[in-house]
Length: 400
Image 1 (tube, rainbow, N blue to C red):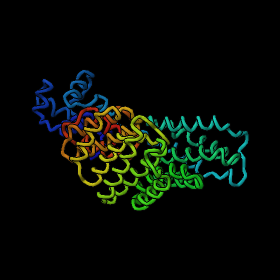
Image 2: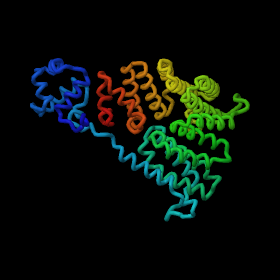
Image 3: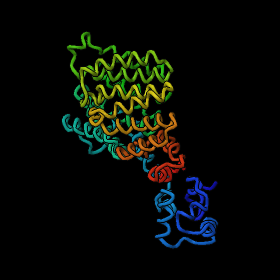
């Protein structure tokens, strides 16, 4: 079949009528037209030159009129995103500091100013504004690299954090190899500081899992976690518990991907004990670690292990708590994509669509910029009763 945007408007009407499983007669009755009129429209014999008629047809088909006209059926703007990623790639591929080549007119930022810039990048990422983060990273990386070269000890933490947020973003955008480079740079820069190494290991675990190296993800996360594990959790500060607990969650996710349900459950139980001491509503080391985060990880683990019903139950229970609203936007939207998949696996397309709509409303870039989300959108849109918002979104992303 030709791509949808290239079809004449009549053929688009026929396409969506078929998607909605409406016969020409039923469709005609709902429009107040004759079956012959519908047949002529779909075959291109009769033109649709009245805006009011187009809107009537769109209402019956539960789609936007713009979809019929093709205005909204263009693929998402991937080019701009790719160009932005290429700038990040160039920043990671620059060795000016190592070879002693200083760019003209570049001054070293003060430590407090650089810390503010890194914090701004993290906050922007956690609000799922991925295009904006992509745009700011090249300059941030360059500034952090030069600050570290000027004063290695004072600039180390900022550079590690710059690499961490870069790796997190690139995983989201499906640029796993490039994310691996950023995570590796973070680990190398952090070497010698157990806390910074543990923080960098969070992103390294994500990258290793995304690349299918689940055993390496499991062993790396566990090694980093137990290196900073407090002898007595009751006396440990919340930031330490948050970092250690997040690494245990990363290890549990890797174990689940490997099919080891017992290890995954044990690690999550260990993380939950730490989370209970931290509580919800905190974001130590950019982890958003707490009881709600651990329970959302249980949903992801259940889904990976093939226990979709348990995942649905966990999702509905956890998102009803106050702690759900305190999580970063990015975290919530990513979980809603998991919930969408869980509903699909339990043959519940209605709730799958609701979760996907909520994800798109919460953080559009999480759904529209992540390659991993495209398949989820396509699956939900295939249901004949999918809401018009999902159908239009699928058309926009070019996954109809």
